[in-house]
Length: 231
Length: 264
Image (cartoon, rainbow over all chains, first blue to last red):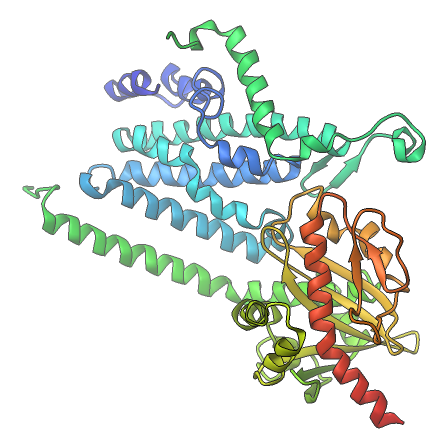
């Protein structure tokens, strides 16, 4: 999916906000979205979209690891032996994740507790390895940097969209980092308090993440017919 | 430069350099942040203990409030005998301090396997614990002139470890409880940390005569003064709370009983 813009970026020296760089940023948001089009990173989209707060912090952590990984691999791209390139990528991603985890534990202990294992799971996020392999290994650090931001943002907005849907319908609330969970529905709406509304517990369970992502994919493909594969 | 990037020698050299660079930087990060992390962990522990006696602390005032309410830190062995006691200012680096006993680590390394080995045989388990070198921490607090003991409990939920603190008055009335978990399902098992669940424990009693000290019952069952209603959809987590409370409190009960006997 990225092979066409890869070659375009390689050819000429590009300015900071050239067309190519802007394309690197905007493409992953829609046409080559890592989750809805490439269907990567589904596992974490499933696990941490119960609350908006977790999704936001997870997105920030992925953004950091993504930028770090892409830029480092891109700088080393002419030195990495082909035969062990996957191992090298894995080691670099894993180290960056450990650093994120350690820094969070030292400076943001509360947030670190909330995310618990999910920070560690960034290592297994296929989007990061995918971008390293498909883009950073063949491109200069500049474009790799933009590619990282683009893809991390493409990941982030899907995560946010799914988590808003799941938290609103599953918990009747929205949680933002630093603000805690805000329950915006009046309590007397709930059946337990004599009302007619009940939170949908299915939304909290993992399958609803997949179904919500599926709905987003459906909407996206009906808008953009070029994404539909021919059989 | 005529370095063959695909030669075995280059690959080896590259890996060695990479491992050294990465290893050094990670070791440096870990070491330079360790102090802060340990302090955070100690603060968190104090907050949890204070939470069990109903004092809400934050990271800023945790150590101050801890010094105010917790009058003694005791460690006991598996058969309920007191080993050590401390009431000085907490030093997380001091390994002799009962505060430094890592109950989670002990559970993971020793108690979990002992539970499995005993396979439901309470006596065999009791013996295994009594003959082990395990130490159990206990916090004696004084709040409004009432003595409250805070007992840390650790167990297994559905996906991972769960833990908590049970605050007991001298007549074995539950003063308060706080629970936490690592990876229980949000909205289901994860609810054990919420107030609506922990509030149910307040005022309940430990059944020192019965087969079970305390029970977490399923599905709106009628609860008596020795039990609370579990969490719907969080059956295995609720069972975990039940198991860790009964298993751990049994050890402390032997200590409490020896205390009351010596007072009479």
